[in-house]
Amino acid sequence: MERESPVSIIVEPVRSRAELREFIDFPRRLYSGTPQWVPTLDLDYRDLHYRRHPFFRHAEAEFLLARREDAKGRSVVARVMMIHNDRYNQHHGTQAAHFYYTDFLEDDAVVDALFTAMARWARTRGLREIMGPLFMGATVGGGVLIQGFEHTAAMTMMPYNHAYYRDQYERIGCRKRFDLYSLFVDPETFVLPERVERMAERVRARGRMKVLQFSRKSELKAMAYRVADLYNPTLAEHGENYPLTEAELRQLIRELLLIARPDLEKVITYDDEVVGYLLAFPDLTPALQRNDGRITPAGIVRLLRAKKRPARIILNGMGILERYQRIGGNALIYSELTRTVRNSPDYDFRMAEMVQINEHTDLMLSDLRKLGAQPAKIHRVYGLDC
Image (tube, rainbow, N blue to C red; front, side, top):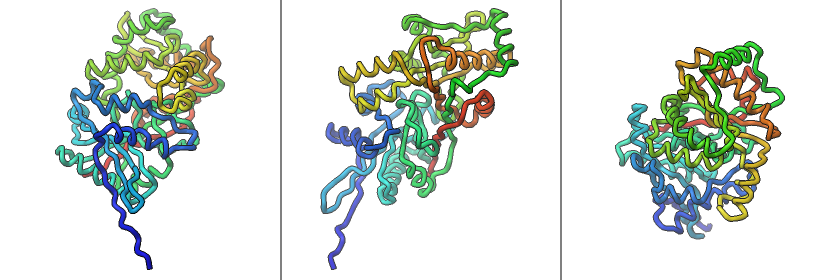
């Protein structure tokens, strides 16, 4: 009787350019033939690997690759980026290592080896938990997709993964930390109740609270830094976020301005002070999928065409300072949301998708459902003691 050849799974840091290419290419193989998956830009991986983001001024991260070694040779079977974000831990009072870009074959031995290495990485840094998928808060999407596999990912703002991921996370003992919801907004059925619209009109008529709109990128850029000042007071307390540094906020502005359409963005002021915002973006998903994560001249043309006439929009950012919510601010922002998805003169949207809504913002979720938004996807952030 012929004996089976021994098999070992080795998890090691990415060091060389060839290993970085393996890290980048692994999900292309894993999701080959999966129409819902959207690739991350190769350039973004390289920027992270070579620490070109201001995030690394207060945090560290490392790419890990898992390989199976047997008589047939070596093959990549999993990958992960491990993160120690001390700024997050101090803000939330935790001792967690985060993980992101976590992909693996449907194989118990592979997952066991990967998560053993992840826990070891955390322990060597004095951390007690691994938590994720989570990275830089709302600047990139987080969580494991556990519902809504039939829907295409919202660009790279929220990740897509195979359905077996949840089973593997829970098999090894991961526990839920919180869920992030994505909701679909159909322009035909998303309707603001008359009483709320009347309240919004009264707020507009008083003249102290205004909605600023933009027609040129230069106008939006000039206002962007004032809007960025609201990020930390409106979002930092959520479990997926932390207070961004000034350098991180500037980087976020540069990245969002690349895909923003000025006419879709709304800023709310009170006596000329910025107090709220509604951020909507053209959905570039089809172009990103065709480009397969690469930036080429033809790919840039595809992105520009998709940005000019999108079939969908993605809403990833809506908030108003708490003290202005009780004087009609909420009514005004919901009114502007309705106008954005229903009455934008230059667009004919078939659908809007709102992403990254934390389950603990239960009032917002309740309000959106009442307006006609339908829950479509759930991403879950897990924790595991180490």
